Length: 97
Image (cartoon, rainbow, N blue to C red; front, side):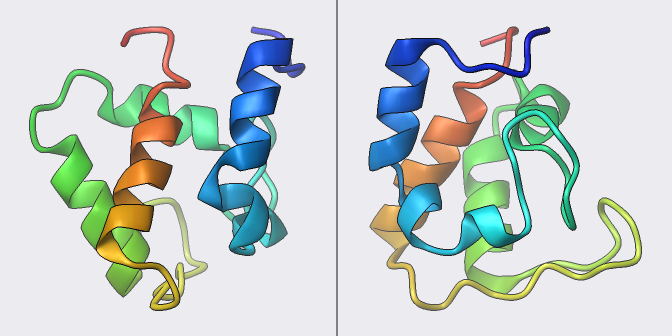
């Protein structure tokens, strides 16, 4: 899979909470940084009925151990609606959606 986003996806990404809420300090779309690539998150949870609620909870409250030793801090600056928008966008990155 190409590490370059199509123009439409990049435009959507620029408007997503990820670009303005410090997500990119630890995540990239296709490459590992501190945290997993966002596309890998999308692929792992693709098609799972509870993925939205599960990932929104992880974004808002943080997590530990799901992707390695480095914990993800809670993103308490996001509202639940913003977290849902972000997770919806992340899940859209899966080739399986």
